[in-house]
Each structure stands twice: as C-alpha cells, then as structure tokens.
Amino acid sequence: MADEKTNAKLRVSFFWPFSGDYWIIELGRDYEYAVVGHPDRTYLWILSRTKKMDETLYHDILSRLTAKGYDTTQLLRTIQD
Image (cartoon, rainbow, N blue to C red; front, side, top):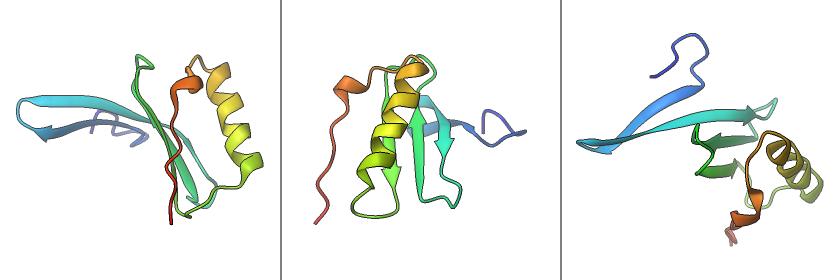
C-alpha cells in the first residue's frame, strides 16, 4: 500500500523484484467501475463490473481522463461475451 490514508495508491508486485505503482483514479459511486492508472500516465485501465459499460458513462470517463492528461487514444476495449 503506497497511500494508507486513501487506499487509492498501490504498489503492486507480480513477481519479485518487479513492482509498479497503480493509482485508483476514479471509482463509481456503487463500485460499478474503477479507473486505474500509473502516476506517469503510461498505463491506464477502465474496469467494469458488467460485461458492457454504458456508452455515455464510458465517454464521460474518457473526457475526464483526457482532462487529467491521460492519452485515451491508446485504450483497447475488450469484448466480453
């Protein structure tokens, strides 16, 4: 845990000695989605609890991320069956 006050900044290690910083940038009111990114803005994920996220919500999230300096043009949407 990189930030014990908010629990929004994590240091994750998938295997030693490699680790990375992952910040929870945005969280849905009912935890229906989460946006996770790297502090230097090189990595970004939009995670949803449902297979298909509402298009308006998705584009609203993209707009907010762009305003925060993230390059959303490189995001790939995963098709969930």
